[in-house]
Every structure is written in structure tokens, then in C-alpha cells.
Length: 177
Ligand SMILES: CC(C)(COP(=O)(O)OP(=O)(O)OC[C@H]1O[C@@H](n2cnc3c(N)ncnc32)[C@H](O)[C@@H]1OP(=O)(O)O)[C@@H](O)C(=O)NCCC(=O)NCCS
Image (cartoon, rainbow, N blue to C red; front, side, top):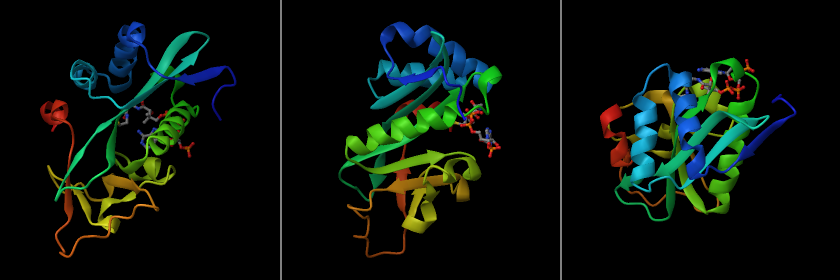
């Protein structure tokens, strides 16, 4: 369970420096921080959340637009990165941010939400293997690590081929691939 005093909220420009510090601390490198800065600069974050304890930012996650080939209409989002300050990891903050972010994605009418990461961690939020929905990351076959949530009310079943749909993250991600 997350600490009782935590707050999950939207991100403001004034939070950016603290968010960058948390992302760098969580990953132990600057690559994901640079990614977030590129996404902010491109105006390419649809939904983002931070975790705060006693006024101090300790976690961050972002959802940005993804595209699909063959084309898929609707709101399509990718979750990345997710970062929690090392001292606060495994206390439920990552889960709290992701769940709140997913709720906002659904409210925004998201048809598809994708993530690349530890299968066990993301399965708990309802992400299922992309292969189940015939959806694959365009860069490489990431196997079980590439997962999706598809809106049940707007199923993706209009493909007449065995070829998977390919997911492309925002160009800001290119430097990470
Ligand atoms: C991955 C991360 C975001 C998870 O956030 P968190 O707040 O620590 O995780 P939560 O408290 O919500 O969930 C804890 C659970 O996740 C599991 N977990 C935490 N980090 C994990 C990881 N890197 N891989 C697999 N499982 C992980 C724990 O085993 C724990 O499960 P349990 O309670 O059943 O043992 C956080 O550990 C982090 O910032 N890691 C470094 C950056 C990173 O790797 N980000 C993810 C890639 S985008």
C-alpha cells in the first residue's frame, strides 16, 4: 500500500525540474529524462501524473500519443516512462500513478494503451500481451514485454490478415530505441 500522505496529481511547468531529478534518480541515467524533455518540448504528452509526499515530488509517469500501421483511428497512447525515486520504490506509488493515469486515459476515450516493460509488473493493471490482440512494437518483437489495454467497447477486430499491427511511439522515443 502507498503511504497515506501521498498525493497523485497532474504536472505543471513548475514541477519540471523536480520531475527530471526523479526520473534520473529512478533510472540511474539521463536518457529517460531527455526523453521526457523532448516530449514536453514537442507538446506530446497527453496525460501525466506525479506522486508527491509532504510536498516533495517522488514519482512520475507519462502517456504520449502512439500511431499504428495499418492505421487505427481513435485515441492511442503509450505509457512511458514510469519512475519512482529509489527510496520510495515498492511502496505502491508506481501503481497509484499508473492507475490514476489509466483512469484519465479511459476518460479521454483511449482505444488502445501500450507499454513496454516488465510483464509481471504491468499485467496487474490489465495490460495483456500485444500478441493476443495481434499488435506488435514496430521496432522489434519485444515478446511478452510489449503489452496493451484495448477498450472492450471499441474492439480491434477489423484486420483480415495474419500480419500484426505495428505500433510506433512518438519520434521523441527514437533516440532510445
Ligand atoms: C518500476 C517502478 C516504476 C515501479 O514503481 P514502484 O512504486 O516501485 O512499484 P509499486 O510499489 O507500484 O509495485 C511494487 C511491485 O512491483 C514490483 N516491481 C517493482 N519494480 C519492479 C521492476 N523493476 N520489475 C519488476 N517488478 C517490479 C515489485 O515486486 C512489487 O511487487 P510485489 O509488491 O508483489 O512484490 C519503480 O520501481 C522504478 O522507478 N524503477 C526504476 C525505473 C524503471 O525501471 N521504470 C520502469 C520502466 S519504464
